[in-house]
Length: 523
Length: 87
Image 1 (cartoon, rainbow over the protein chains, first blue to last red):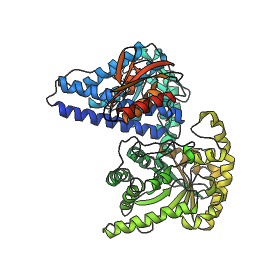
Image 2 (cartoon, rainbow over the protein chains, first blue to last red; image 1 turned 90 degrees about the vertical axis):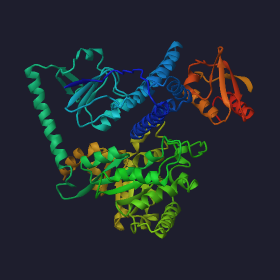
Image 3 (cartoon, chains in turn yellow, cyan; image 1 turned 180 degrees about the horizontal axis):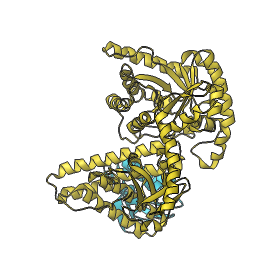
Image 4 (cartoon, rainbow over the protein chains, first blue to last red; image 1 turned 135 degrees about the vertical axis):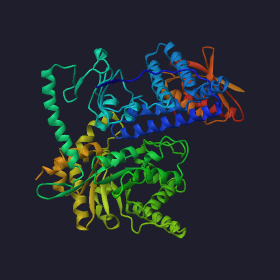
């Protein structure tokens, strides 16, 4: 049950049509860029802005004119394969950087290695990890890049063990998010493990056993069996509603950001989607996504979740999520500046209009609800309602069918909304707490600034109080309240949320089976 | 073609962040931009190429621009480095 990540092998070949090869090369660059952007988006709520910069650095490498032009020159001049050309150019840059004997710049050489390897593997038509799996395996590797992790097929990968890495690096966080048992940083002794050895991986205690004797194997098997049965039972029951023993029912929804997440949500028994992030349409592109492109991207996600209630959040770009194709002014406090719908309105025709139209066009075939981020005042809310009305009329006059009265909710992330839900309650169908942003605004602690991160957990008691307030006001008018921020997945708070009367919790899909099982055991 | 010299005062020199900022700025102009350091001249629009120069803090580099907006480009880039990569 062991598989080694294959080494990179690049052969020089002659290609008949260099122009076609150049096109293929450009497409591969875009594909890996999209992949990196996807990983970044997944990590966005878990890492600080400084830590997230690594992904931007990787994307800059893929956009570097020298790297691209030199590779293209080689392909054109020598009629050679793109993976060979890129390999040669990347190697040259890496050598130049390493020659400078500067620890920092040597680390950048590793970045080039990681990114170019991903592109080369893509060009070679191999999945990033080059794992053609048909049976369950444990992957043993020196190290696995964060891009590679995101491509792991969880169907066949039982777990991952790496020689390099530490518990706090990005990869550990990613494994966790993906629900893959993993141990990182076991050191060189890992290389004594041979292909087809039997490996016991106990990620809970952080230990592996190679070719265990009968006794150890049996003890482990017993332990694993109990764990597996529990997981299996959780997953089996995860399509059932989450109802407490006393009969209180909670909607357990998933947060999704791409089609893969959507598939996972369906598999893990999400009752619906409480937060469909639309940012992935906008980030890491060099041009505006058109209405048509957005329509297709949303549709691909929605098709994974037929008949489910889907809460789509309108764009939340700006602040730390910058895009190059819209001019954004440098702001002292971007988290409190022109972001989300504020930015959408500033560039209405380019940004907000195509998104609203794409979503409206999908409303007739899917059970969509709209969630508006960064609403501070009733005027903010009214402005969005007005444009939705306007775009609906325009589409209808073109003969396109739009669902009547699409439910509309607002994020509770700006304290004003949490304090005075009365101002909004008559004009919305639901409220959804974005606990991460709410915490940063409550504590005046920038969530991307690690030196003030200790303030954020301290916001919890205050958030509970605000939840009580919003639930009271909303329920009096028959409206529902959900949580889609990080706190929703915190099992230690679930009982409190139920007692407060929260109607919906939206979380990463991997947590859902366990969460539902937990709720069913509550009074 | 126009050119001028400037001292990189950033405490690490041209590292990934500053190189990337410079390359992006250079990329916003139509002119060709080149940076010369220790007799080596590279494409100023490439973050990777800039990093391979190994420019340390307080080193002086030569920036040149060639093209229709060369004066504007050169002035903007020199000021950008002088302002320690704040625009």
